[in-house]
Image 1 (tube, one colour):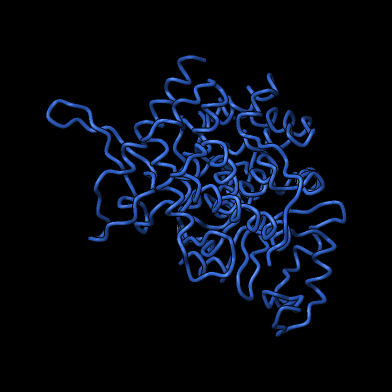
Image 2: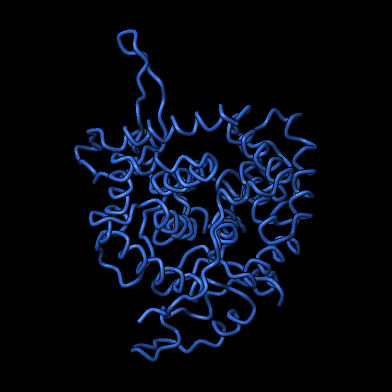
Length: 404
């Protein structure tokens, strides 16, 4: 355990140092607060140096949003695992957290508390129609704000940030639970929406047209299931199921107890669609035909049921296990782990799987992937010691005030 925590500490320190280094992307210097999407070791004059990638080397040259959110969540997990609260209290770490908040809490042309991001700026790092306010980023944003409340010292320098975090967190929680949540009751409400409503008494606040409800969803969603929609904007709901956002909503406490059970009910009822032969599908359903051509730009790597377009990503196994344990549905976690153990080692731990049910090794999937192996090991560790779950969970909130 000591060796693993030392590795995490070194990672936190090194990425913090990279956060503030001078950099230019297409001759434009982005605001500080970003963490690198990745980095590699290069030998320069006989000395090893970390070379950070802030999006310059990414497909489409898109700056990552999620890396700085995960950094704060990981810092909190490290402190809970080691009890070393002095690390977060160091001036450099306090300054780094404030830089991230400056980036995420900046004023924008937006009426809502969600975080606006471009397509391809997080784990789904290719064009997939996830621009706007994708669920995954909103849930990570929520978790980051919860972590900041524990990590920032309550002093004069941080008082403004802590007040801003508390207010934003309150509005964000209400917004996601109220407007992103989809169950059979809400689906019926959308089906009967009146169009072109405006003003403070409008029920259809986002001007969603009932005709936009896909036929597959009407047949797919039962009365005991529910999930958070993939995205929401003016006149538009992305009805796709995005796994990481929904499972993290359960783990972090964003989802209420009832919502958590509904999400796990959905996974259990639609096991073949969402888990299949290798846990777990990154999103469902896949974009196909003309929709695939328009939204992905005919991306040859994101063909239907492959890669980010409905592929099965084994790294999601640990998140499924954590969510199942959190919701007292450990049998689902064990079932998923048993399925993964049949093929992972034999297939040499590939990055992702293809196919409607995730039964083919990804056409371009790299093997012996660190995050694939780590996802499996973390899932096993969670099942062997449920106390590990506390590293990434938060206490449930008692009250959330509606936005006014």
